[in-house]
Amino acid sequence: MTTPTFFRVRGRLPTVALAAANRDAHVALRSFDRDAILLFVPHEPECEECVRVLHDLAAQQTEYGLWDGKLVVVARDAAAARSVASRLPELVVAVDATGAVVSDVAASGAGALLADRYGEVYHAWLAGRGEHDFPDATEVRDWFRFLTMQCPECGVPDIPTPSSA
Image (tube, rainbow, N blue to C red; front, side):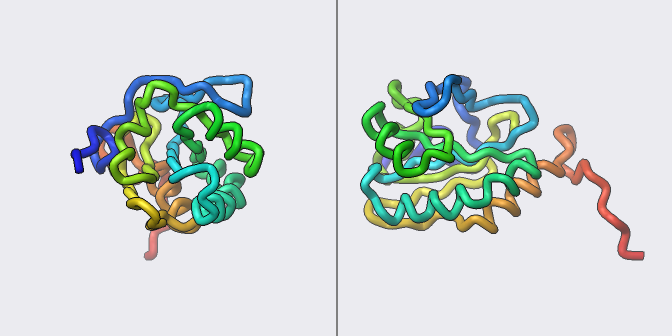
């Protein structure tokens, strides 16, 4: 298996914008708009376990937004994107026609990664073919919370926390 170029901790997302299949917009992978991002590449649109995981994550989108986080499903082609979007219309589904994202997980089959607003990857999950080792909704929320509170210069919490004294 080849080593992913950015689908790893400390990797950087490419500076591309993917067409959103179910929105009138593009999805910038490095948005700089204060949003951390969870990119989810499912096995196939028909993979029921991937759809179940995405459904659980989608149910928490409002809470993710409170922590400046967004969830984007990345489909391998337009047909796959339409299929996922029809099953989960509440999610942003992007088409990766050039393979900028999906080529990094092709050998594994499926994956998810969490990156900060600057495109630095903090956590990556390569699920494997037929496997579903993805984060649950609570873990994703905790990661978004962590990333939101990071100071961009030094990596320590940017939001004051109550002292225990």
